[in-house]
Length: 506
Ligand SMILES: Nc1ncnc2c1ncn2[C@@H]1O[C@H](COP(=O)(O)OP(=O)(O)OP(=O)(O)O)[C@@H](O)[C@H]1O
Ligand SMILES: [Mg+2]
Image (cartoon, rainbow, N blue to C red; front, side, top):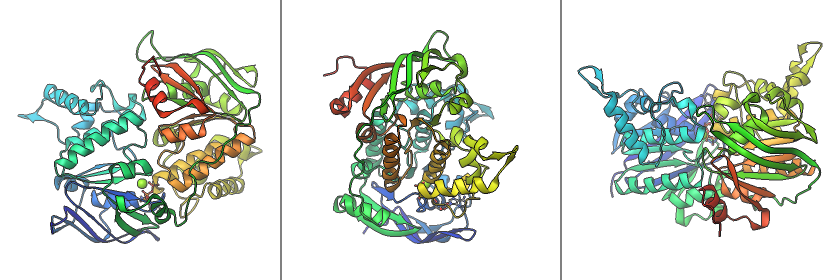
């Protein structure tokens, strides 16, 4: 029998008193994709952070080609051929794309930086992912999906033998994910071993050769993916069966809550250009309007523009509940009953150094003030209620965001906005990184909010979510709405076709 590329044996890990991994075994062979699945907070990222040299104090053993290794740093793990695409993106936002790609391994000649060859090489790497962006621009200028592609590109460029991908497609749209899968096939043929973490069922079965499931820090089982039926997999993950992923959502259409006519968001970087171009939108009480589109199509910018993220730079007529709205600032939007769950929890969703209670109450502090003083007991009560409703997994409500798993951070973002009791809810990829059980709960929550007359606009990178949850779907391309579909006429093909900018939709 061939020796596995990698063996992780009896891995255990605690954070303080919190035991998060217990006697976990995982192995990886050359040329295979080994899926690591499990609920939010199960310990997946912690396990691969141990492999990647992020955590050095753990129990158990790591063997590469049968030889025991202990990595004292991320750099040491990288030197041993381990590349990690982290769940929370690890790029330096103020540095350029090229500088990020070469960080720590700049090309020098007689101690001079070889900028021209670095830029050329960076462009070549990006081209492998069909990514046509300016490599000299700071990373922070790009939306989260592009940043995720840059992160993937960085890991690919290391040409490692072991690649770890922690939810690499969580902010990618369908065609971008397909491109990544193509690259994964190539890597497999070259003998690279890949550990792949995802909450997306289709991906597990599309690319996985074997699957290991973690639950509450323990490995529940490992199986070849074609021998593990989906319902067994789900039971392994959440400890119960989940019948249907999407609840029955019947529209409860009432009055128009949010109306935009010729809504336009100018491009901050290119004079005369727009990222949202004369979009018309009407959302009724109790209705979910889905907005599809590729990265940079303007769907995220539409939500942000309406919410006031760009201030009064936007143009067009907007009405909330029949009354004109021109203030365009997040504060005013919140006061008018609007909430925006952004797609980038790290930068715009949460404050990492604040705890759960502070984050949950952040957008509704007024409700917790009495005589100018915050009421900590009321804040705690609200946070406890939200975390119960969303099934938040944390050792205490005083836990800072950096100590929560990715999916649980996402739940805090949702909790924060639900706490404002919105009447118009703008959701930009609300289930990003959320496990299958929690997704089901969020979909039920959306359905319940609709019956209460809340109007929802849903941008999502996940096609099944858009198709099954939306009453109507608008497809955007280059800032414009190129297609509008009712629920019963919407198909994945039609949406993709229009999202790619093809006019003649069959
Ligand atoms: N730096 C840290 N300090 C303290 N606790 C942590 C830290 N990182 C993770 N944890 C805890 O470890 C547990 C496992 O988290 P981990 O991030 O590994 O989960 P996960 O399986 O990757 O979940 P998700 O699917 O949500 O990303 C969680 O309970 C989390 O709160
Ligand atoms: Mg994780």
